[in-house]
Amino acid sequence: MTDTNETLDAIGLLCPLPVLKARKRLKPLETGAILEIHADDPAAVVDIPHFCHEAGHELLGIRDNQKHQTYLIRKGG
Image 1: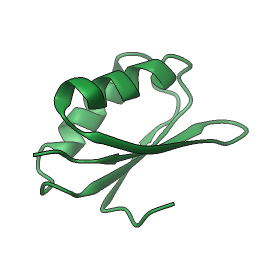
Image 2 (image 1 turned 180 degrees about the vertical axis):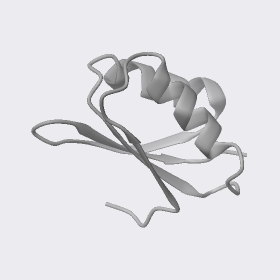
Image 3 (image 1 turned 45 degrees about the vertical axis):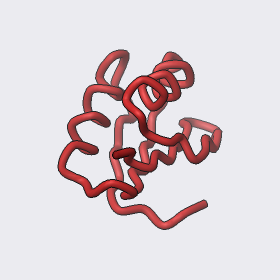
């Protein structure tokens, strides 16, 4: 995928925790930094793209692994 600046392990966390933790992890990062999130919450497939759209971040991709998904988010300005 892409080089990341930070990684967030949200496996085992349920809605809304993956999004809340992503927001907290993105806050101190520079604009353009990339956060990689690992999550297995079924709602994350909807919640994370919606969060990116609402907060002005770019969802670079979603990779579906057997036990979890990996999301790449580029922090917006």
